Length: 499
Ligand code: ADP
Ligand code: MG
Image (cartoon, rainbow, N blue to C red):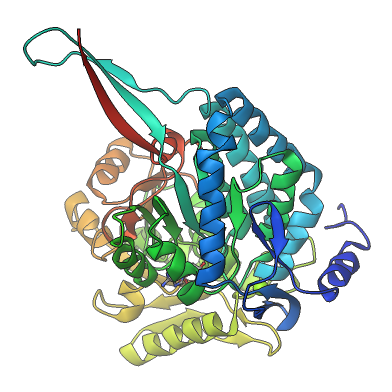
């Protein structure tokens, strides 16, 4: 097997961050917070501090928004679509050229096993840029016949929305930052990006690559800092035209409230409690690993995690045994080793949250089939866990745990598709769902009845830049990715000329 990262790279990164504060990117310059304040980002595998990072507040947000506004009204407005394509492709190439470093940064800051930082974060970011690059020259309005008396020429313009705030969570910082930047830049917007306070480092490195690619100063600004300071200031800012947010449902509500200052556009990708259905006729050699990885991957810190499993009673014992074997057999631990499957949770707070949910589940009467405990003491590792005997009104069954905790339920032939869809739809969320059956009719009927933004049948997989991503109900507003994701960065303007 290839070494998981280049020799000496880790030491090089440690030296870089020992030299001083990691700075923010505002108007093409690397700056400290005006207050001089910093915060620490840690490596969740060990609890050790990696870097001190500038802690931005409202004054820094004001400067970043002003820089983004100036770029939007100035140089960026004059740049043609094909040039935006070229810049996005150039950025993709630079990420590819720096893949090793970006993957390692993601691994130490987030706690993601190195193989997945490469595959998901780095390759995902490159894919987002190359997909969206092509859109820059394909955004189009339309012409329309209107019914007013007289002769008219009416057309609809699709214009860039303007200055966009993009607030990113800590679970997939690089690919989510790029997944937000790429369509916004393709559409001609300018950006103030705020990474999560737990995981700012790959985003800051991305900022360097954005400048190296040749994007004009102020087109992409990065403000690091806390949600309640930098994040809240961005969401409330009167000169921000749109806020795009991925994160918790609670913070999503705060963003909606804050957006009222100027009725800025709001796009939200929030939590989930996504169901997986395994029918008696399913190909279990696919369904079992998919159901296990659907919840254990990234230690369950995935908004679309398959956290509720509904399995037909005929195959339930076999499926549960398979999932338990995977839970026990997967390598949990050192994220720098090439074959590690599961890393730690991102922070002490997240560890407390997840172990708290497991304790609550036990108190509520759930039975722990496997896992249920913290591993070790330095890092924030939790065993892959399966809970049985949950009820629909239990907190572990309703709420997003955001950890490697699966609630498994059986169903029988007495439950028809409508009944199963009802169980799938029983939470407030509606982000995604997975279905395993050989019966195409069952699969498509259930897919129609589920209230979920993404549905997978007989296969698992991550985000694809071509497919709309987002949720029904409390899982959010709007869609990212695909054509809808580009259009979400545009405003329509209807122009009519009396001829
Ligand atoms: P968590 O609770 O797991 O940290 P959040 O949804 O709160 O998840 O965080 C996602 C992102 O939202 C982070 O970048 C965070 O700093 C930011 N954030 C948190 N609170 C607010 C807020 N009130 N306004 C704007 N952004 C916020
Ligand atoms: Mg960190």
